[in-house]
Length: 374
Image (cartoon, rainbow, N blue to C red; front, top):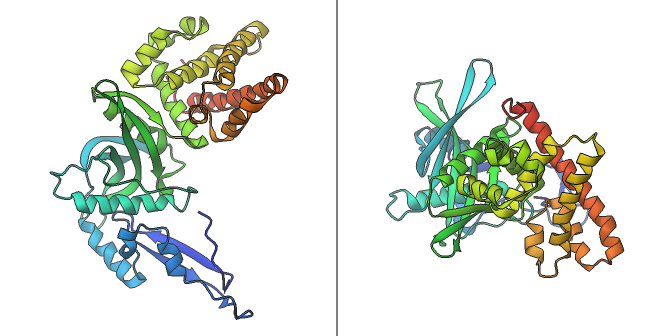
């Protein structure tokens, strides 16, 4: 979020959240107030910060003294929702960190429902500092549901269990005829202290594992995704599908087929578009790029899909946008208006961008997943 605050010299603003209950305050420093132009009034910094909060959560911002009281109170904090699963991350040899996934489905029978909704709103406010044009979800819409991720650890003071907020995800159930749901990931965010530690793929995998168990879930999709999410989702989906016999090297080299999509949807709830994308990533992994004929076959296969996707007049912009990462969407949409000669040139650019992203995913898998490269 790029909020402009005027009227101060060398201004520094740090927004601070309590690590469990997510109340917030700020530390403000500046060298002076600029009074050179009487027509310009110095902004109210607190009000600027509150602009990021929903109207129901304005009291979540606290003066620093009251914020310190909340830090004491949050020793009694308990996560909202139902505990779904636990997983561990080893950051140092012999030292593991435990993370717990909670599902918050806004059930009317939940005695902490109102508190949980307010907590969700505070969690979503974190996204406003990192994501442009982010919007709060409609808490009155029963088709929205959420996951919270917490690190659980024992207090150094009394040995009791305590929790730190690590992330959240907002999902939406779309109707899929005749009696299923198509679940769309609307938002997924890790709190800043929990980034760059390999937590994202494990968070997504934990959400997947819960959704796989639900018979009414037809498949899992995502809203127009950011580049970082595209890579993370491809990483998790490619790792999962690489274990399926339908995605063996022999089958991959013979082209995408309905059996690949069928098993990817039935076992991992992948939509057809994502199943095809994972096929391409795994086929690239098995393609000998230094053998011209193999590389040409791979490229021709991908080109065929791209041409159909971009040049089909029946395709709307929304579906095209969901098929590409952020940096590819505008080009893919613009190509719909290009002349055939221009389209061919731009398809080359689109293909190269796509393959570069695939290679990023494969490099990460080779680095962090020993079983993948065997």
